[in-house]
Length: 393
Image (tube, rainbow, N blue to C red; front, side, top):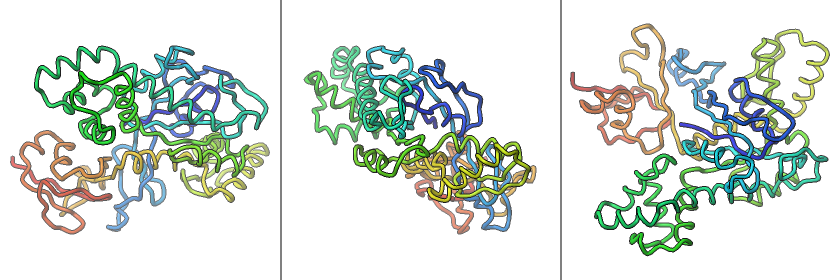
């Protein structure tokens, strides 16, 4: 699973990336501070299900903080996109291509209105951030249309003559864009286009590709720099798009995570408070007091909420743990060491294959560890399930 962080230059994309991953990324108050994409590991926050058994999980990957488990996900921060990116402006074609493998996009915008359409700093409130929502969707749809348009006539003729299943073939042909059969089938249902591809006009291709873009690259809006914005701007942003909008302050989140890393405070990402455990200097105390006031008003910096919403809402995912009815520990004594993010609707057999190909091929049954009931391969997994797979030896 890969989450893409996108937006104009200078709106706080790299700060969002750093606050989510604590990976080093160049942060500059000028356009195109980022040229090559940054990749790193972020985390979604879930409850530590081991607590229900009177234990604490000991993850192989990720970590436990308080009563929460943080499960790793991959993030990519691409260089800033500007209007005309799909035409190559600002190296736009390269930056768009970097997003091909992303499952979901976090669109970071400057909710304070202090970054113009070219990514240049301007007086706060002098630019309307609503403009940025439409610009990005237009560029993404144009990019998808260009990809589909290339060689479409040849592809359509060959597919028509081959007699192969249309939806499956389209999904396979464009799988590099994270398009699957279900998305293609849904796009056909939504657009009502004929499955005789050779009859499609350019407008048909544009309509179909835009529909697939929305399904394969869903967007959440991160209304950044909200510490310098207003609730009125937030309402305007929400009313201007069908995408979900979450206000955030990436600078505050980064400051909290850095302070927690250096043991100045104890902070669990996504919560409305932190505890001072070290001895901050005067400047740090002033900054932390300012952040504390913000959290008292808005309850969260928004960064963790955005990551969780992207994975569990936009991608409709659940968390499933492998475990045993007789013991939650592995051979080294680690409690529920693994946690897998699966799409909702996944089955016990899907989970067996996720663990190992042999488990899937030799699947006999599964056991729901919580209920201790045997379930078959068609059992639909639920969030926080703990599943033992029984396979032939």
